[in-house]
Image: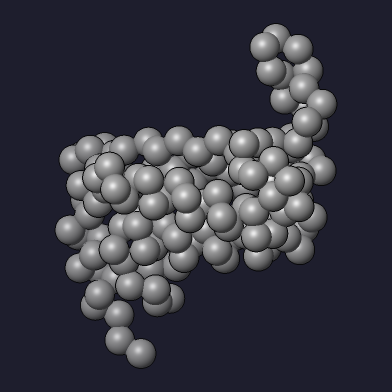
Length: 142
């Protein structure tokens, strides 16, 4: 059940780059939660990528291209080392597709992890946890 909110300034990446980024981020999120990469896993890995026209920095409208990524993951899937790897992988994914992020060495990309604790996520009114999610996706057969 990985979910990420990706907010980017309007001119940071092209539509083609956004499509490439979506695939890379999905793979990173699945790996982080220890989910197999299969159709059922991809069907529950959600990305909300939004472009916006203006970002205010210090109370003033900013004139630099930036991105903010909020990653919602089950808290029991992550520890300090996994968080560091996740931040690095996301930054590298952006750098690989955007010259504007590459030229800033990723300093114009902010990442946040929003941990979901037990019973803080539900689907269809049923609380879902990491164990249930892993069981669901591992039941998929080609």
